[in-house]
Image (cartoon, rainbow, N blue to C red):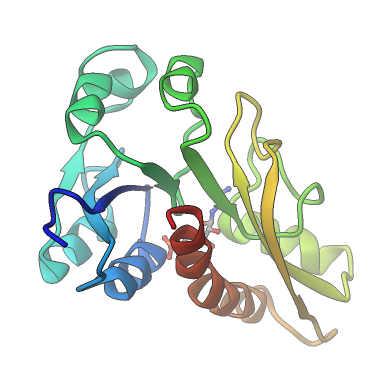
Length: 192
Ligand code: GAR
C-alpha cells in the first residue's frame, strides 16, 4: 500500500513523549497506518528530540494558535488526519477543534476514569492522588474527547494492582507499562 492511501495519524504531546515514541515505533513499516505528524505546544518538550531521533515531523505551535480557530486548523486540514491522538497533551481542547474532527480525537488518561479526572489531573498529580487515597488498583482510560476534561465516551480501560508500598514513581511506571502495551493496539483497532 502506498503511503498516500494509508490511514493518517496525528499525535499531540506536551512533555516527555514516551507514549509518542512507543506509538511511532509500533507503526513503523505498518501496512495501513502512518504517522503524519507530531504536534506540541511546548517548544522545549522532550518529545521534539524524540521526533528527530525517530525521523518523524515534530511541529511546535503556540497556545494562541491553538485556542483561536485559524492557522493550526488549516495545518491540520492540510494533513487530513484519520485520527488525532492526545498522548500526554495537557491543554483543554477547544470546541472548534472537536467540531472540525468529530469522533476523530482520542485521549489517554493515566487513571480509571471517572475517578481522578478533570482540570489539574495529569501525570504525577493523578498518581499522587491515587496513592494518597490508598487505592488498591489504578489503570488507564482511552476515551473520545469532548468539550469537558476527561468526560468523553470510554473506548478502553485496563487495570493494574497496587501495593501499599508503591511510590508515586512506581505507580507511574505501572501505568506507563499499561499505556505502552494497549494504546497502540487500541489506535490500530480504531483505524481498521
Ligand atoms: C501519560 O501517562 C499520559 O497518560 C498522561 O501524561 C503522561 C505522558 O507521558 N496524560 C495525562 O495526564 C492527561 N491528563 P509521556 O509524555 O511519557 O507519554
